[in-house]
Image (cartoon, rainbow over all chains, first blue to last red; front, top):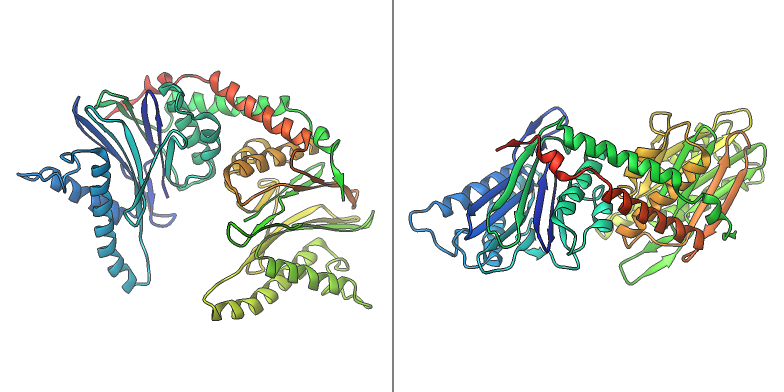
Length: 252
Length: 252
């Protein structure tokens, strides 16, 4: 399993992924799931992946081949496409193509494999955009009403995002919220694991502002995780009592 | 969908269920999912159900038939079984039997239906016990290490329980935590909905201590929900900054 989350606020975008992959509980490895591409000041695109490694690695490899082609085409290289929307289409088409090929092989063994992506980016002169690409290759886009996207094990970490993230949330707070969202997921699902890859892109900069790995035991992340637990426990203690709910009940 | 949660602490047990059932988004109804049975002071058993109504209603109806039999047998009536463990077995067996029958009908239409239960109870002289009965009819039991059980849409509401519930948590706090766990689920999944059914059983009493319905708009529940949002937002603002995580990163 995997957990990747992307948040898009007015100030920019934050992308966070874990690195755990597993084929059964006794076959656990660390793989990078965040891939960054940039022509600083001109174009930045970040891809995060979830699902079968056999699909995601092939898709990324083929996409990179198209970028590095001697004469790259704007219809196959997402770094040469005229818009981020068209970049998302190129990635979606490649996912669909690779999935279809692997699906045939898997069907012979009565198995299945799927993958999905979050694609975030900006071109000089354009808006920042973020897409969630489904296993079928079609996609949806983050909007002011829904300013974050998640793939993989998304449920545990959704409540904090639902409560905190708005378009005018600061980039700093967006980063904090993605880290807490990941923290809740790490606690509740063993198949999501450290280290983490965090990427920050400022709106308009068209380059990666920060991109670093948070290793297990990172003191800042551990402190944040403990402070959040403390906050929840203290807040919980200070809450109104169940008796208030009781007072207005309709007894059966 | 459904969300039911049962918490077992030293002081007693709290059981909370929603009431929404849906067959498609335009066919939504309210059905009770919590069923209480008691011979006060002697024996109390509470059942909460999730899954296909066609299965859960039939299982409950057949179980009640066995209890109301002229000469009820301890091997088929869970209110006459010598232990709560054996009550859980009776319920599991009935679930397995009913599911198998319905499965054949569903298979003809290439559909499937499943259900699961949480069973909590105590007999005079015995320990309080709580079981999660899987669709296959087998079950697991709540323990000091895992003092809560969930069925249905369980992920959104798990983080708060993971952080708060221990065996020595007070019954009052256990109730508060189940309500907040439900609140997070209601916010994140439309198919879980008000009103709620809350049941409280005190350890050793062998009777239902409280059992009431919390209607939409209950002022106590709304206040609790708002206070929790406030707590999370305030706590979030007071958290250490992302820069602390940043400070110790391993740049790629």
